[in-house]
Amino acid sequence: KVPLPAPDYRINRVLVLVAVAPHRRVGDLARTLDLSTSRLAHLFKAQTGGSLRQRLVEVRMVHAASLLRGTDARNSRSADSPLLPWLSKRAHCRSEQVGQFLLE
Image (cartoon, rainbow, N blue to C red; front, side, top):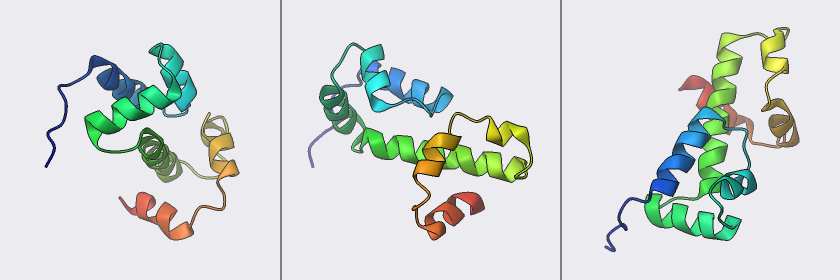
């Protein structure tokens, strides 16, 4: 097994940014760190063992599930969420995957 590289402060910063603002795009995160998107993706995978895009999807799904749990469809807070356009573009997502996040 190949050991993970030493912690990189930039990846820690990305993790914080993703947790605080999950609607940000990979390109936005890369510009914040003055990196190319491919370099950020490479560093993220080397540091965490996973994909940055997949991490964003997971965090967004958890965030969306928490919004759905705490509101109903008529509540304006969910309609004002910056994640709404992202979720509507991905309406083709498998319903059981969304259900899994709702149950957690």
